[in-house]
Amino acid sequence: MFFGEFDYKIDEKGRVSVPPRFRRELEEGVVLTTGIEKCITVYPLSEWTKLAADLTTGALSPSKLRRLNRAIFATAFNVNPDGQGRIAIPAPLRQYAGIGDEVVVVGANNYLELWDKASWEAEKAISQEQTWQIIESLEKR
Image 1 (cartoon, one colour):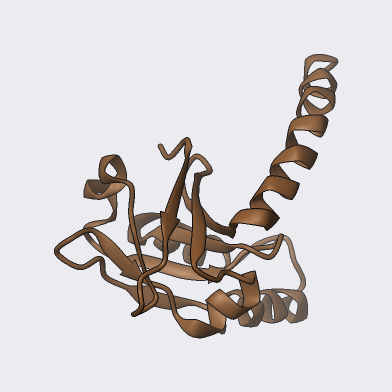
Image 2 (cartoon, rainbow, N blue to C red; image 1 turned 90 degrees about the horizontal axis):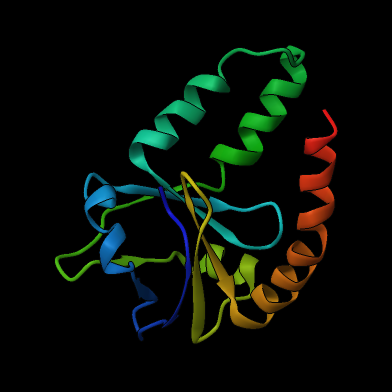
């Protein structure tokens, strides 16, 4: 399980360090892809495999499933952490997420997210504002 937020700098080669407590879970490799809210989603290979299996069948029509697969898989990159626990973030993903020199690594349960610092602060404010409303709606069930 991934949780917490960690501020890092991107090095001159476009790499970011993975928080040390997460490195063992990512040793097999990771898949980076575009996130929904202008971030980069980092899946451990095991989680990516589960997601891929879920997207081979489902309740969606075949045309919607094809579009969804194209959107997710066309923007994905398979990356292996280096010996120092860093992952290279491909330029197209950095550009998509607006990530410059600073990145925030955010734990999101079974995956990580990489955010531009300013974008993360804005998203965090929105999320914190809505969290209690969402929790209350769950309690009413």
